[in-house]
Image 1 (cartoon, helix red, strand yellow):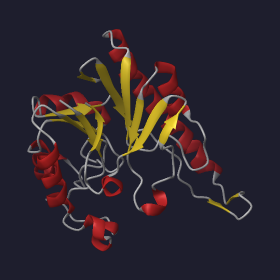
Image 2: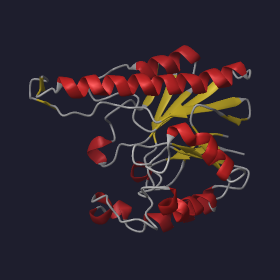
Image 3: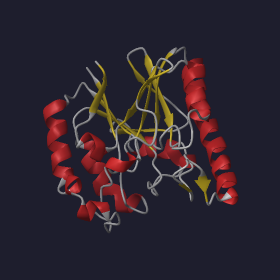
Image 4: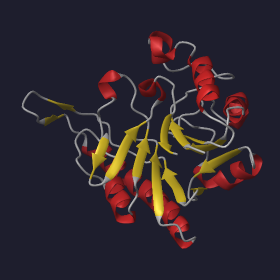
Length: 248
């Protein structure tokens, strides 16, 4: 029995393909087949696979049925986190999704999933990504204060949701945590964030995230060990569609 993670499948079996990178970058060509074959070779029905968001380009649940069926057919138990492109998933209706896909898929939001003596907790998260750029002297140029204020509100909302996930697991008696986000835990301008502080406060052993695509984005946030926590980027193109093993 092992725990794996990957993210950002961006499936589009029923919906129009919107991501230009999926049309131009070699790593995206036929990625659905490559990913399925890797899962079939690596995972068993006793394993657990966490998918950290951006599952489908579908705008609603009807446009995602084939994408979710594809995920359902993968080996093992599948845990889904909400990504910024998952328009089919209303965070306030997560319980309805879990009822609809009971014993097939588990949707992780304001709740937790158990893996041995670990609680798997998570939320979409949020990271301010601009508009700004950094000049040769390392100074921030063209900082939009209105966007920054909006980002702060989104971070506050997402940290509340993450805390609800941690607290539900804590109240159930769990003291070992793996924390999942869709967005990276810090922006390119941050060394720490509300998300890293929460991971430290609850003693999470790992923080796992996606969202960052393309070689130039793979080091936008923390990777490796920091303050005793292992941080891992698991976007599909970064992993070349091979899920990352987190625990045996």
